[in-house]
Length: 442
Image (cartoon, rainbow, N blue to C red; front, side, top):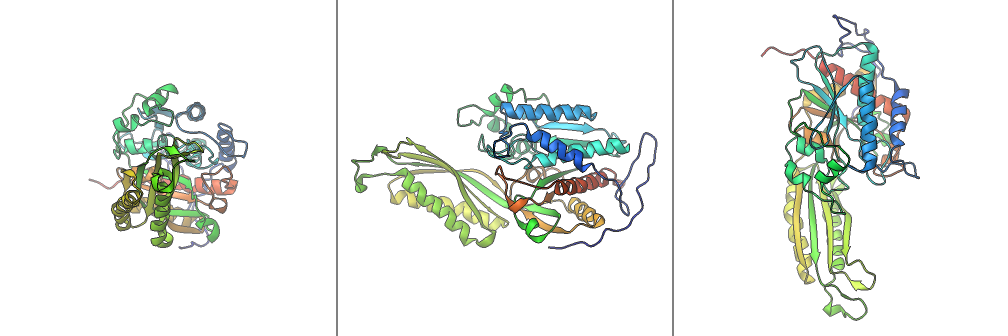
């Protein structure tokens, strides 16, 4: 952890050039985003899919998601941004720069949510990006490089079982055809869902060259709040591996089947869930292991379950630990199943290596915090984010803001207006600095 001291006193950034101002992060800055306007946008977006407990249900590619996308598109049009949508439904709102030959600086996050999600997970990064665009317009600033604000499709992964879906396809991490063929619990494919809400655009969902990508997000953990830091400087993201598991036993009568004759798939699944927890705890406080979804068949109170489908995931900052878990978990799960006479299929869904963010992009976040006089903590993201995929093809970094009690993926998720404003201000500073950075001669 580190803290930075009082704000450096610097000269006001000066206007220059025809057609508006241009500015970089020099000695300091007095440019301020409009925190109250950002907060109104967050509250307006939270009305779409609002839940009785104060959260949002804006699951990807639903009618509610369509409404959120439409509102975002309206705001982008009002801000004079040109909007493109690709075949995965990723939305790109562009503001032209002074130099059309420069690669764009990208920033953004996602507007979809968990079924019982909070107001700020994802939405903060998108709407803070919109506030960056609005503030630049008000100040008459024309950046050297173009800017692109992105709303990535289905970051949450709760409907189709693949997190960071839109960014994964765009970055080439997952093949588009395979992702479009995924089905939700009702049998609807991604392709059908995209068409149903009119979210599929004409632009190919493939990587386009970009200068940088920045993502502002709530921390979704307790460290910043506990440490009293205003900003998290995210240096990278931890490694992950996900599995789909199918355990097969035999349906039988609950009242007439004695213990020796039972092939109870749910009892076997319970042992494997505890295996996931044990493997997690063996990794110490850095370990993460979760089973968050089970489907039991036939799911009747007086039938011994004959099939259970569930997902398991592990996360760790160490690639070596994830490699070990990717090897040992299927072996140990198979042994538990065999001891009960159960069939088992363990399918790796995806594996992501630990992702370091770009050093120069991280330095911009670090310097913005120093110049604003903000207490900051350097940290590795425990959660997966779109920036993790984008970092494989574009220099990237992330900015975290604290959240109350570290709570997220919950309707009670909460941040303050000041925290939202601070995060958006750092985003503004780093986007402006990156877009106006001097380019070295080839």
